[in-house]
Length: 187
Image 1 (cartoon, rainbow, N blue to C red):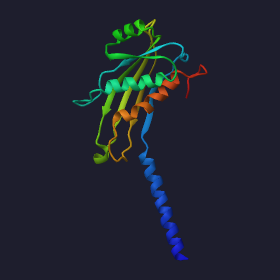
Image 2 (cartoon, rainbow, N blue to C red; image 1 turned 180 degrees about the horizontal axis):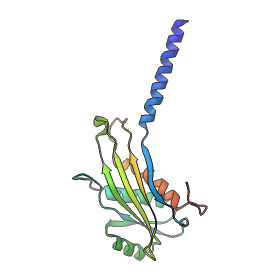
Image 3 (cartoon, rainbow, N blue to C red; image 1 turned 90 degrees about the vertical axis):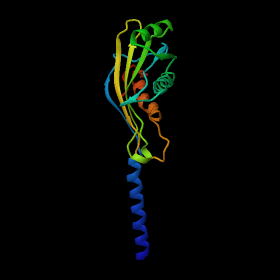
């Protein structure tokens, strides 16, 4: 009978360890700041997605990260309406003009504030990204809303994780909030 209890205690210890480790396995996504829009966007109006400058960490520039970010924003916007992708990184005034020329009512203008790719499987340090999302009315050029979005990957990995793997889950809540279907800002 004591053998059964010893075996049962060992199983409980293994389950407890797995539960603890699974908590460390989870990536984190948060909205550091968010200014709610006065009303929800309508999916009937086209939205132009600008391409941000490539991300960097110190002197290291990550080529293609700006395009990856724009594509992730476009994918989320396209779930709610027609999205139009910018062709290259431009300044704000050019983005507004290109959005108007394309017939877009809204301009999503992401900025990569932080892009950190770590060899997490060796270092135990997570990948990190921080984005500033700004949304403009193209007719007036006025800011509708903005947010700062932050994400960290898990430190528990077998390798191959990249910062761009964090983009969809980082951007989706912001886009959901601005396209809240009942006219109210989603939580």
